[in-house]
Length: 274
Image (tube, rainbow, N blue to C red; front, side, top):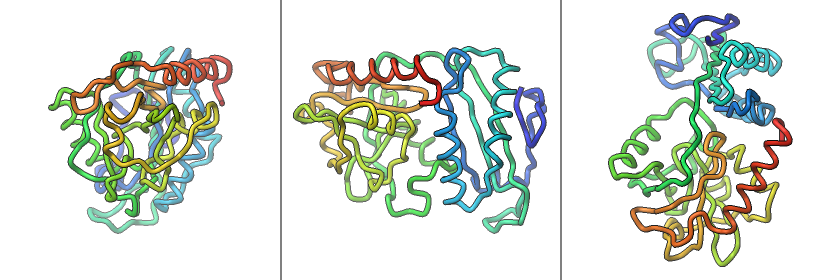
């Protein structure tokens, strides 16, 4: 079952118009929420970011109570204990070009089962760059063509995730993840000014443990230059990086990563709305 513009419908009936601007030009925003033990995790934080992304793209986001109700209905209908909840809002119907109409936004909420993430992940640095000064920098939009290409590149090179540098050759983010490294015993992650998305799990880690936001050259991701590294995302949680461009970390997961993962797991077990 899925929720589409006010109706809970079967998967085969979860349809939007061929003129929906989200389909035509990727004019939309979204959130991916972890469903864990039947509970949407950090839904309030996700709705806050959805509102910020909508504001940045100029899309009016439906009321939070409507989205919460839709999420509850879809989760109840699915019966899933663990899954991926996708909340998508587009600019609604528009012309077959970049201009918009004054249309009602489209709201779709759907859920799919999700297996546990792997114990670790291997990554590759892709040859393309995130534009930290672009109009969409820091917004979670449905314009994901770059990520599709980058993830395919990673898979073609035997890796699980792709890592972007920005136009300054600084470490930025993955296709759907943030990156933390341990350098000289300190936990460091790129600041949002790098062009990375302000990840929900990233924010929780920064609140949970002693970590700093600091620009890092993309070369700092090399296992010869840092002791540990891990990815964060709503679905991955805290996932150790085992190898970068084929070079492996000697200790995976390292002690800092284990500490962060334990603190994060304890937080979610106690509170679905951290």
